[in-house]
Amino acid sequence: MADKILIVDDDLDTLRLVGLMLQRQGYQISAATNGQQGLEKAFTEDPDLILLDVMMPDIDGYEVTRRLRQNPATAETPILMFTAKSQLDDKVIGFEAGVNDYLTKPTHPAELQARVKTLLARAGEKKKKAAVEIAEAEEGRGYVIGVLGARGGLGITTLAVNLAAGLLTRTKSEVIVAEMLPGQGSLALELGITATKGLVDLLSLSRVSDITRDKIREMLIHHGSGLDLLLASDRPRDMHLISQVANYEALVAGLSGLARFVTLDLGVGLQPFAAKTLPKCNEILILLEGVPNTIIHTKALIEDIASLGVNKRNINVVLNNRIRSDTQLPSSIVQNKLGYEITATLTPAPEVFTQATRLQAPAVLCQPESLTARQIGKLVDFIVEREALPR
Image 1 (cartoon, one colour):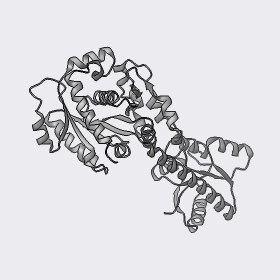
Image 2 (tube, rainbow, N blue to C red):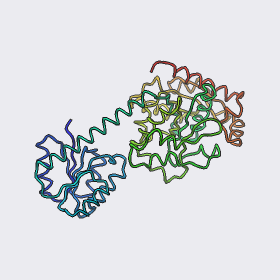
Image 3 (tube, rainbow, N blue to C red):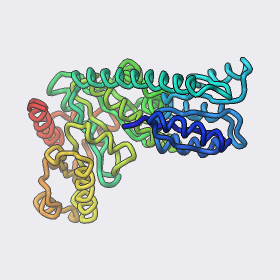
Image 4 (cartoon, helix red, strand yellow):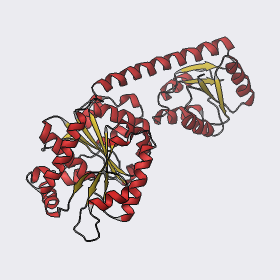
């Protein structure tokens, strides 16, 4: 497929001439006549290179460059600043803003073509290197378990941390629990931890390439239970970071190389990053309760996840009746209404979880002989058996 070049210039003659010149060289051309339109096209069209003018009436090229570099989607996109300015100070400003190369108008077509070709070649090499790094990471990939529900209040975080604690107890291996929803963290409060910015810091990085295993390891907090935790903040304003899909991809890939088991608290429904995150999970646990409306929503969620290309064999349902109530349907009826097999059932145990909150530890570690611990233990057995199968 031909490389796509976005040209941003308020001079229509430049747009036509340069666009035609590069189109004749086999490139796919997109054009924008001002800075704001250029930003919008850059974020939606994912060009391979951006040819950018400096002097524009709304947002100048320097500011456009800064905004492009602040967005993970365009942080690595090559930018060739194409302008009438020729002073050294102007070029320095451009390079400091994040420009890769600089051409002064008017320029010879051969020089423009050579600069474009060189920048695209460098970008191609970086992509190849990144692909190799991802492949190497996949070789040491741990077993990733995504936990989510069709709605809130089902105990998603509680299941994620107790499953992780059960896996740690059973296998004596490294286990990571990662909250994946910035602004909605609750695990720190439950476990008595004050530092909660690990996820937010990683999602806020402007360069996806900075999300390395070493960087992720720095953000993990080691809990007294033996679990390693990547915590989300509880500040609602951080919710905007759920759109940083590229960062999420790098984060999940990095986490999977740091422990034998990784449990992801994915929260409610299909968040913006789900299309990329869920297919990377070896197992997906969907939590529901025995209530008609929740069953309907869960059935739809299963189909939506399967539409992402996830094998239904890897989608498992856990029935969690958290409260003692005659309104809760029994497992057999829930399974019949859902039309999907229930992998595990958890029965109400408010006293166990109240004690766990008081002791700031996973419930299965506070009362290892309890019915809850045994029920989680069966789910742990299921996960360990599945992990042992060829992938």
